[in-house]
Structure formats: C-alpha cells, structure tokens
Length: 298
Ligand SMILES: Cc1cc2nc3c(=O)[nH]c(=O)nc-3n(C[C@H](O)[C@H](O)[C@H](O)COP(=O)(O)OP(=O)(O)OC[C@H]3O[C@@H](n4cnc5c(N)ncnc54)[C@H](O)[C@@H]3O)c2cc1C
Image (cartoon, rainbow, N blue to C red; front, side, top):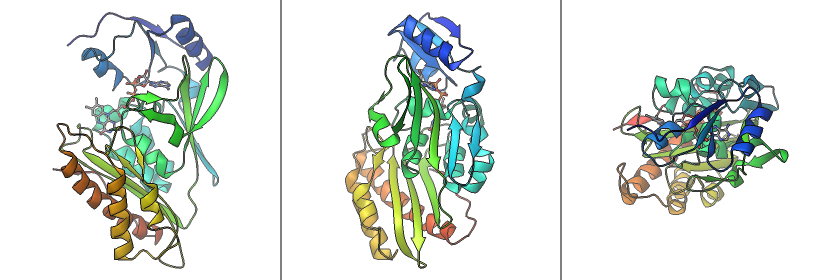
C-alpha cells in the first residue's frame, strides 16, 4: 500500500516546527520515527496533506538525569533509551525499552511519538504512569507540562492542542528503596503486546508496601492506572493474599477489546498473571537483586 500524496517539510528547530504546523493547519502532522504514522498513512487511516519532520531537531534528542530527576527528549529512540545509563539505573525503563518490537523499530521509533500516538498498545504511556511522569509540550501558546494521567484522553486522542508538540518526558528518580518491573505478553517481537503490566513499588521494613503504582497496557482504550489495585497493597505486607487481591482489582479495572491478539477473557487472564509477575520481580529488585526480565512470546 502506498500513502496518499503529501508534502514534506523539514524543521530545524522546535519553534520552526510549531510555526510550520500552525501555518499548514489541520492536515499537517509531526513526523518523528515514522514507525506508527507511516503505517497509518499506508493503510489510509490517516491522509495528512503535509508532514513536518522533527527528526533533525537536535534540541529534542537528549537524555539527562541526576539523583532527583530524569529528563528524556521526545526524539530519543527506544533503542538509545534501552542502552542508556538511565535504563541501567532504573530497571523498569530497561524492561520497557527492550520490550518494544525489534531492533529496526527500536532504532527508529521515539518515546515522544509513542506517547503522542495515543495508541493503547504502545508501551511507554503505560510505563510512564508507574513513574508519575510529566509530558513536556510546546505550542503556539508556549510551554506546558501535562501529567501523563491527563495526557492520553481517549483512543488515539491526547491533550495536545493544534500545532503543539511533545518536547520531552520528565519524572522523579525513584528512591533507593523503590524498584519496578514492566512485563508483557506478545505473539512475537515485531508484534504489539497482547497485554502489559507495570508495577513500581516502594518498600519499607522488609516487605511493607509504602507506596505503589500499577498500570496496564493494551487493557482498554487508554492505559489503565489501576488505583484500586494499588489500594490493595499500599501500607500492607506483600503477602500472597494481598498480591492476589491486587491482581483481581487490576483485572476488574481493565476493559480489553476483542481483536486479533485475543478475546477480552483471554487478555484478563493474561493480565492477572502479569500483575503478579511484575510485583514479584519488583520485590526482588527492591531487595537489591539483579533480575533480567523481558516480554514473553507465545
Ligand atoms: C512492526 C512494529 C511493531 C511495533 N511494536 C511495538 C511494541 O511492541 N510496543 C510499542 O510501544 N510500540 C510498538 N511499535 C510502535 C513504535 O514504538 C513507534 O515508534 C511509536 O509508537 C511511535 O513513535 P515514532 O517516533 O515512530 O512516531 P511517528 O510514527 O513518527 O508518529 C506517531 C504519531 O505521533 C505524532 N508525533 C510524533 N512525534 C511527536 C511529537 N514529538 N510531538 C507531537 N506529535 C508527535 C505523529 O504526528 C503521529 O501522529 C511498533 C511499530 C512497528 C512498525
């Protein structure tokens, strides 16, 4: 399939990209890695009149962290994140970046494109809920930051306004007694996941859950922040019973669609297992254990 004809524009700065998108109007789209947009265009799900290529804007491609905060530019590829010191220090980030598709997609696709696409099957939006991330944006009205919980509004719909672009992602560096895991289940590497679960735990006094974030991907029309599941664990010992109840509450919060990756009932049973598995890995990592984890294929 070939896309419908379109005009191509290369932006050399964020301000130039915003001004091009603003001048070109409704039919214009930002182009990052093209790993989602070009497929939508070939399938004629989207027929933009103009593409504004962000790919050569140096100020969008950065990774930076200190003991307080992590900052990642929108144009940073999944592959670069997977190989970064940030991924080495925060295992849940490494789990996510390595779990996305295959080398080809990871070397082109970007974290900014992943959140801007508003696709519930994309991994970063679910993962970023577990880290309470903020999405940094800039548009004709200036800069703002949007909580990830408010950023994805509906299926393929985000809080981005006309001609506004994602410039980066920001989140707090997890505390020393906090660790997480992001696990997924998929048919094969280049396929989107059937379901994913991310858990970031903060432990105190051995096995007491001081705080927790649980998010599910491919589990509804948007990423699901499983608040009731968190309540089953927060302030309590991480007993088998409490973890079981948290997994049940997470499954109750999800609303998976029936598609080529499975029925809602199948996805619910996968999610139940994934939540328990992610909690188990997160607990071991909180204890200082180095646990390798990656998406599982079936
Ligand atoms: C075979 C295959 C398998 C895949 N498997 C997975 C998977 O398992 N998990 C997963 O998470 N993803 C998967 N993906 C998607 C991949 O991660 C994409 O890289 C990502 O979803 C989009 O990033 P991109 O940079 O390619 O964005 P693009 O395709 O360039 O853009 C996507 C959308 O976001 C908009 N956009 C892009 N950047 C910005 C920005 N900075 N500001 C505002 N709007 C912007 C575009 O206008 C477009 O609407 C897969 C893709 C392919 C082709």
